[in-house]
Length: 143
Image 1 (cartoon, rainbow, N blue to C red):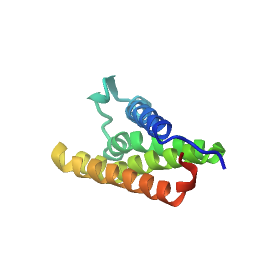
Image 2: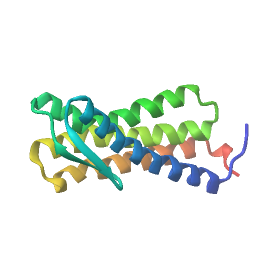
Image 3: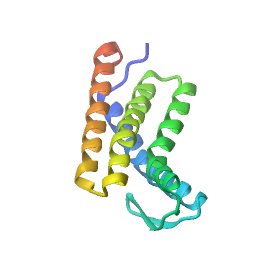
């Protein structure tokens, strides 16, 4: 089994984490435009200028970001061969899955970012817990 350095693992995690944030916002934007809305991305946020009129379409726009990351990262995980990359991909996908299931619908329904951030915190805790568990379970891969 190939040995890896913890520094390399954490650096890869940070790169894929920040890439996932860009993909997440792009997912919101793509769904918004596909459903007839208007918006733009600035920094790590997608701003909705005009939302679609249908209630269900609005909900799709809100959950599309996390779903895009989950789909892309889990598909990448299926073709990836390196264990450390698989651990990182699933960890970040779990973050977006939990965030997308909890935070985005709460933000949509209540329009309150404070309530929505609960999902963000839970998503990050899920990512860290899974990452640490997999490192412990596969501790032989670390140098």
